[in-house]
Length: 86
Image (tube, rainbow, N blue to C red; front, side):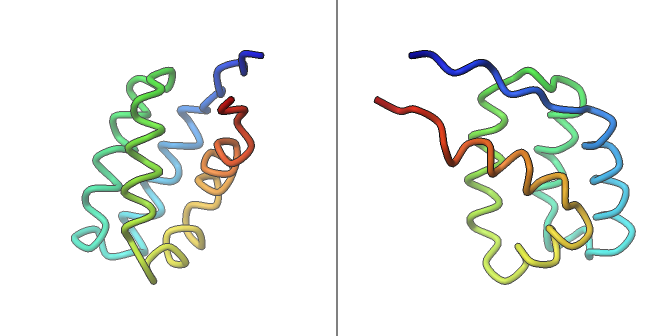
């Protein structure tokens, strides 16, 4: 069974970028912001979702900060948890 592509809301991504830049110390999460900016330009690129997951996973304690100011990311990342990989 094939899963439908995830729908990414570019406006929500833009809002997330703005909030992270304003409140979360942009230098510490620059790779994440770069991926989010790419996602805002091309929200249908599935490869960017994989990159987002990898970069988010490498943030360690900063994950909490990111999710505080960009809660939409939890929706995007959670969608991938239940994909049928068989």
